Length: 143
Image 1 (tube, rainbow, N blue to C red):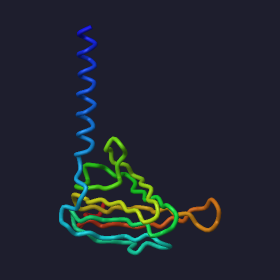
Image 2 (image 1 turned 120 degrees about the vertical axis):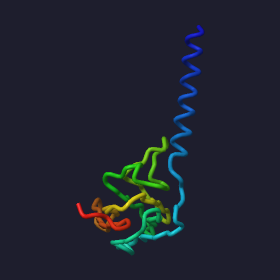
Image 3 (image 1 turned 90 degrees about the horizontal axis):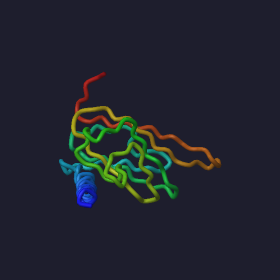
Image 4 (image 1 turned 90 degrees about the vertical axis):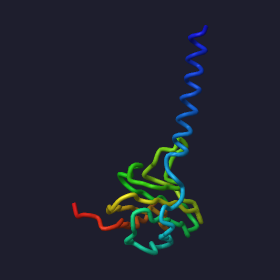
């Protein structure tokens, strides 16, 4: 009986601890207070951006339909802040769905070249438009 109560208590403590870690692992605001907007409409307002480490890049959906912002190989350790790029457990995810007039943002920690795609519906039923973009953070070294 005591063993079951101890296991139950341990499970509760671990669950609460994991929830606290997931919610507090990354700040939700820019570290430098510089914000660079990419407005998503029929095209991207900025297909290529040069920002500094800690600057915030914010994707804003100005379309009436939802869009997907995809950042392949996104790693939490490369970020100093994020908003909307995490799941309910707090883990960073590579794809975010933005409804009309919604936004999401990231702040990168160190120099890098970050390629991304925005997928949006077109007038042709079932087809998607892919809008590619790139964010150059700092002075990234060529690979």
